[in-house]
Each structure stands twice: as structure tokens, then as C-alpha cells.
Length: 370
Image (cartoon, rainbow, N blue to C red; front, side, top):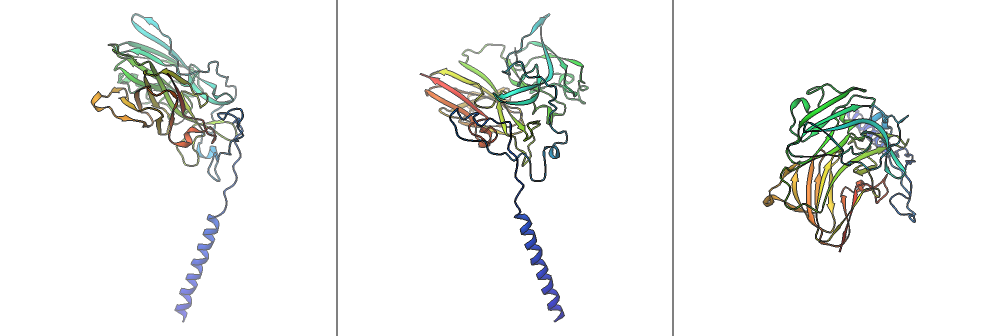
């Protein structure tokens, strides 16, 4: 009888513990405050009645500082950007046959939408930084001055430069401290689509703007050039409920709430206008921390280059969607033979929203005229 009573007591206690656990699990999460930085009409047209939904910027019981020990990007005293379009060609001077470029790393308040600003660390005050475009075999010299509050460097992503020019502290150089300058010099080769970005504290510095395109044109000009040749750099941003900019982390419960093509969210993303019969080349580059499956409406495209390397014609895949992983570059080409207004967009559907309001984010409009 004692044995029966002992085991009965164990069973009863187990049921009580399970019931308590279920009650705790079912407890509702605390409400999250709305994000005050979002204009309810952005991306929806002036007559839209849709309102932005409150974005859970943190997991229950946590805030941004818990997940990012550095906290928000310092914004006090940071000036507004004087330019509004990023990724524009950078002018150079000649020094004995060497193309000389100058860059300055500095913080600015950058508009990703008309009324939404992020605190960005930039090259020459824009997101992306200026495009360096040269010809295969050119000798280039690039001097960077650091006006950031932290050390930085530049890595030439995908380029087989000399080891001491690779820009990866502490392996190939010392970090460039605030107030210091450093000069990179190398021969630009091979031809293809590349990019440059910071290689110090990369989990912070790249997501907040220290990236830019680098294109090397072939020494032998193409027999037939496409009518349009555009570089699209894909990235993500996190603006907290406090209005501050946080480095975007690939962490559940802390997903970014803004997404940009060349530093802009739709409807501020650039658009493209071509005519029926034009060949269009788009150079896609994912510089953030998320994969973006980019889907084209109205046409199929061929993958003509990957990571700066041309794909032989016999091996070129024909697709309408391509997943661009962090660090990857794809050159895609298509013939605009279907008149109308078409879009290229990310098919992770959260990535086509602005703070949870659709349409927004990674949408690129292509107008094909008859």
C-alpha cells in the first residue's frame, strides 16, 4: 500500500508541474511600441489609408542593447548628407599613368526614404560609396582618410591584389586609426563586377554603409554593349523604436525593418527606362547579411557572370529568380521584349516592406517602352 501511495504522489506532482509549465508558456508577450520614424503614406500613395504596424524590434524581455552590446550608431553631431544618390562614378587624376582616387570615411545622416534617415558610415558621404570604374590592366592608387570615430580599412572584395593591399587587419595591414590615411595601390584585373568595403568590425561597419561598387571593364571592348548596364547593391537596415540606427544582425526577433537597393528603399529606389529590343545588364551584389532571391517580372534572364567571372554561353542558365547570398555578385542579362512597367524584387516578402508596410524595400522598377 505504501508503494502505491508513493508512486501516486509522484504522478500527481508531475501533472501539477506540467500544468504550471503550460500556463507559463501561454503567457502573452509584452506589447511592442510602434516605430515613430515611419511616415504612414510612404510607398503607399497619397490616398492610402493603410497605417504602419508596430514592429517587434526585440524579442520579449530584450532590447536592442541586449542583442548588440555596442548599442545604436552614435548620431549626435552627425551632419546630414549633402548628396542624395550613392554609387556614382568617382573622378580620378593621373600620376605618371596611375589612376589616383581619393576617399574619406565619415559619418552622415543618410535618407533611405524622403522622411526616413539612418546614421551611416560612408565613403565620401554616400551609400553606397562612389563607384570606382576602371579598365582591365589599369594601375590604380586609392588613398583613404579615416574621419570615423573608430579604426577601419578597405578590402577589395574579389580582387586578387597583392597581399599587403588586401586590407584585412591584423593579417595584411594595421587598422587605419581615426585621423590617419592609408594608400592602396595595385593593378586592376581581371575584368568583372567587384566591390569594396570595410574589413574592421565588419558586423557593424558594413551594414551601416561602408561599401561601394568596383567595376573593371574588359581591355578589349565588347562587340555589342548592352543598352543599360546597372549595378544594384542589396542591403538591410534596422531602425529601432527609439529612432536610432542599429547594425543589422541576422538574429531571430531582430530582423531588419528597412531594405535598400543602392542605399534607397522603394519608392525612392532608382528606376530604369528602356525600349523594346534593348539588352539590359544588371549587376546584383548582396553586401548585407541576408540572402535575397531576386525575381524578375515580364522576362527571363541569363546569368552571364558570377563573382566577376564570365559564364560561357553554353553554361548560362535561363531563370527568372536568383538567390544572391551575402558577398555574391551576379551579372544577369535579358532582352526587353515585353512592353510595360515591370519590377525586379526580392521574393523574401518581408524584404519588400518599409517597417512592415508594403510595397517598399527591395523593388526596382523597369519601364519597357514600345
